[in-house]
Amino acid sequence: MKKSLGTATLLAALASAQDITTADQYFQQVSDRYAQINDYEGKLSISTGKSPMLGKVMYRTPTLLRIDFVQPPDQVISFDGETLTVYIPELHAVLSQSVTSNPGAGGAGLATKEGLKAMKRNYSVAFELSPDPVPLDAGAPERVVRLLLTRKTVAEGFRTIVVSVSPESKLIRRLEGTTLANEKFTFDFTGIQINQNIPESRFIYDSPASANVYNNFLFNSDDQKN
Image (cartoon, rainbow, N blue to C red):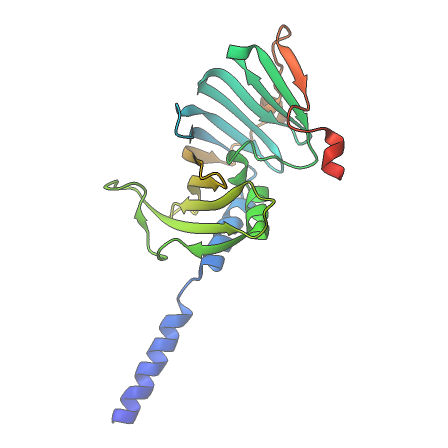
């Protein structure tokens, strides 16, 4: 009887172990979810320890991204697959940068199918504490699964990224990136609606004709080839 009981216990333990989802498997589930998304729109807030930035974010696969801010008022970030454009009203300036890949517009571009592919390639993945959902913020009723991503190469701008995922929808609720200088950037996504058939025309941004344009403000396009 004791031997039989021991075997049953072992089999139960093995069956339970098979049900455990690893961090890599969970991250893949999130990636698979975003692979089903052709476009989305919703609200985005960005916090850097200064005044928060608030706006509306739109994405269309594979690389179209636009953020229209209400705070700072009328500021715009757009990416059409080739050019990153940033309009800063208070400076009456348009910053334009030709790029060979999606720059991500900060962390917003990470919450996309292509962004998740890049994170999987360039970061190691673990659960921050456990696979169990935890409050998004202390005392908050909303619960998320928190994944801790640690960069594999020094080329990545964020040393670590904490990805908070809504367990029911498998959509990213929050991204928290920490730089080498220990600066923290938080990107909150709310009210996300997926597969709305957003037309490409909504991503076209015509900057004010009177604004000063500064091309290749990050680097020369030739620098990316070196």
